[in-house]
Image (cartoon, rainbow, N blue to C red; front, side, top):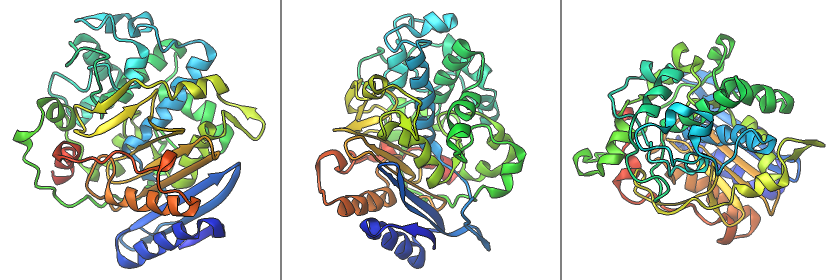
Amino acid sequence: MNGHCDARFAALGDLLAKRLRDGDEAGASVCVISDGVVAVDLWGGFASPGVPWTRDTLVTTYSLTKTMAALVALALVDSGLLDPDAPVARYWPEFGAAGKEGVLVRHVLGHTSGVCGWDAPVTLEDICDVERAAALLAAQEPWFPPGEGSGYQAVSHGHLLGELVRRVTGRSLGTVLRTEFAEPLGADYWLGAPPDVDSRVATLVPPPSSGVDYAALDPIAVRTLTNPLIAPAVTTTRPFLAAELGGLNGQGNARSVARLQSVVSHGGVIEGRRYLSASTVERIFDVQADGVDRVLGAPVRFGLGYAVEGRTCWWSGFGGSVVLNDLDRRLTFAYVMNRMQPGLINAPNTVAYLDALRSCLGTEDGPLRRPADAGGTQGRAAERGADS
């Protein structure tokens, strides 16, 4: 294990060291930024067999990527280019087809649009053509009445937000993320990575098979999570890394994730530069849905672009990666890894690190209480992609 860890967060360092030693992690990194200071920046293990996880190792962050898409969308809200209460069709006229004229931008940000996935069978190659895949979404009917509860947009989320970004800026989601956030913040995070990044991307170790009976799941969950199936093995291939799948294929490490997301926990201002206004940051906590998600099969309180609990906003990625912003403490925590564990949210490794963080901060509940339990099998349906 390498890096540094302030004594206040020793429990996090001890946990990473133990998990690496016991084989619960192959390779991983954790980072805490507290009131503008990098209090924890640790990494260790192996990026792939025989290849050490170094300071600059990157890994696919799966759905944690959605928090980066949220930053871009919030910046457009801040600039007046995007109104959360406006119909998506104001910016993307074709999207108003098939009963979606009432879908608002905030419905997309809060996973309440009803456009959880594709009606037509699609492949990984199909969704990597993001404009064409977005056009398919624009033409179809919603799967449930928009605004009536949530249906997690596991893959389609990035296509929906990405097309909105393209329509109002003329630039791609990955381009805006890089030029407006990653480059000025010096964050080594990529959505649409160039070829020279490939050698630094860790190989994912799939989770064990869950034995889920897919026939017993909610049909919306099955349609969302299995069309297409995306096996972890593809995440180091050039076509996957080059694509801009804003719902799932960002490449980063804990340091870069925390650096970017600290914009939120620090009220929109980093080192004297304002990236988001305080009022826009507050809009994250406008609750869009609060109940059992149709796709995840778990209770989730969605705000604008994040799940929210008290004054924290967070989201995780398939396999266990997680980022959490605590606005009251001006603190961001991030954890990414390559040995995946079961679950789309609240995977065992996620819980272990959040428990350690709470112990460091001396709290057992409140704004850093454990995110809602994934509960039933729907929250594990995406493992079918890993099984394949």
